[in-house]
Length: 284
Image (tube, rainbow, N blue to C red; front, side):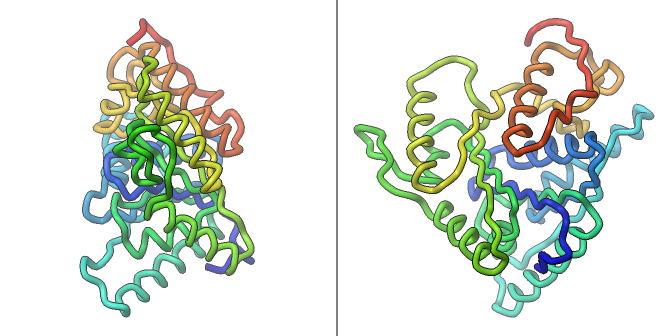
């Protein structure tokens, strides 16, 4: 990718473990940036599951159904070969690299959602990232994607393959483009109750962040509303009145919005959700 003429900020949402909430995070970021008047393109690299693509398709369908203009990014979906040859990988990587380079001249931000497994396109996307966001469910099962712990003390004993892949991608980016990647690990689906597991995972991530040079952020709580958003393509940063949402908003929607704004602040964006509103009925 040529960076001389590129202007867009490339935001990659990556984690090789499925079910971490990558598509939800990617969609919320994309819509928040659109609401701040930025030109946004989105790319789905998970051609098999296509959760990000389905999310956007659901948004378009819901907007038509309720006759509302819901901001939607220009979206692209890439496929990859299941058992690629060296030629397949080279061709696929060139197509993705050329596409990102072209989009970078037309948009302010490019948000890329990666599959929940290793792939050559996902590795390339990581090396193109200005900002890498890794959602991580708050358990040691998911922590294992990033690092290993001692079973008695729960102290960090080493890094895992995904962390090593990210380090290699950052090294390539620095070498080829003299540009750094800001890595943010987002603690996702957090319990709203204090627990020993929550504390130990948090301590482990803080220790690992010093080894792997990432920033750890308390992200999105475990809320049913995020699951309810998907069929209608909605996000926490939308104007959630009763017509748009399809039901009356609650304080849970307000809390979700604040959590997303915290992530956006961490990424260096301003209060992009200030213009949106939620009229809450009660807590959920």
